[in-house]
Amino acid sequence: MNGNGRGKEINEVLGRMGNEVVSLIATCRNLGENYAKLVELLAALPSAKYEEMAGFRDRVILEHRDKVGNLIAVRDSGWQEHECLTNTGFASVAGLLLIDVGDTGYDYIGIGTGVVAADPTDTDLGTPVKRKAGTGTRQTTAVANDTSQIVVTFAAADTLSGT
Image (cartoon, rainbow, N blue to C red; front, side):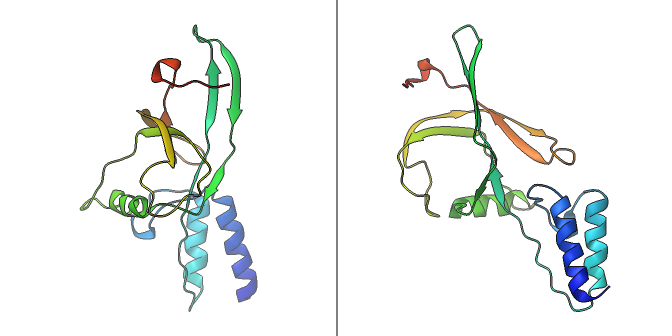
């Protein structure tokens, strides 16, 4: 297989690996046959320089319930790619990947208003209304525990109102 065909195969394998695999090759856990195939392909390229790309994306699913818990409506944002991780976010993620450094995980969700564009120096929402601690768990999307989930309940008692 020539170099061009091998590059195409690498892209196909990366595509099958799923949503934003965040790992370091040296410390990766079992990501299955697609990861093994990728390592095999990269090793076969004599002068290939490969930089593993990582990114973040999120999805918000809102459930509107009445006071006794009956579901009124569901809104799903769909997966959103983010190109503006904050400076403190990059530092925290780098620390969380390392045993020797560490950092505090994130278990808060905020609701805010406004239309100001995100900026790398941000430390909060543009116009925060309410922030609450949630319950964080890991969920399985493609491989075991590959997705983090935070569940928070906001209510009228949180001084929130809407139309």
